[in-house]
Length: 351
Image (cartoon, rainbow, N blue to C red; front, side, top):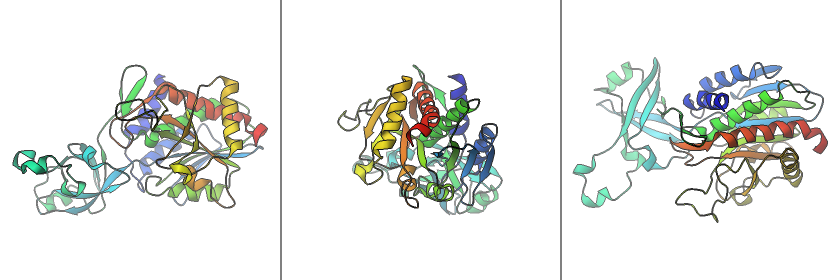
């Protein structure tokens, strides 16, 4: 598990919000170089590693972007106002340490607000809104902040590194979807020395958190026969969530999506479900089935490209998604990579 944890940490600790995935893209290119016949970056910024074969064309997709922030205004005293990039819950941001990607390199800051000591009693009971927060980088004026390299449009990410918990669990930021990236690369490592009939596209997509954009354009260009999305999903094994809401658990193995967003996202075709379940059963890989009512994944965009691309989603149950302290099991991640690799190996029998 040490190698897998190191791979996840490499991706998760790096910085890259939607539309600014360059550093992550470079890391993915490095990891795919020895696992594919060709690695390229398309016009949109998606990273595509191709392993050639004479069987079905399989696209494995994991999005590279993380949720973050962007500077919209610098006030006269050098404090930064910002807008969200992706789905934040306001109260999670307050009090966080952040990294501002400036022109001359990274700057560190903290998210602050009006202190509770001088609030009216009723206001202390209210959630502080994102619009009332600001970032303090230590600048004393707008001019000094600009001299430090901050500008309108500078991107911002959370300053948090991966740490181990007990029981093969780890915590960190951006597991959505750097865990999916790690699972995809780990699957490609398993395939490296095997004779694979399929042509495999390992794709790091851009701008998933702001509209599934890179998935749509990359799938259009590749025109695969089938797509497997490597993702994370919400479990229901901690306080505040009922089993009726979310029955999947950490440690239960990879999660196979049947439908998400009450069917408004993707309804996975039965032949794809049968292929993935049959592969898992044949190889003794534990797994969980999921019908979700919440968000969507890149599969929503990919399965509607051109005349349609049969698509499946293989996810790792991850607690506290869209926060700086996401938690997952490395064993689930490893079994997910195994399932993706085994599915690729058996694809010609099912597609």
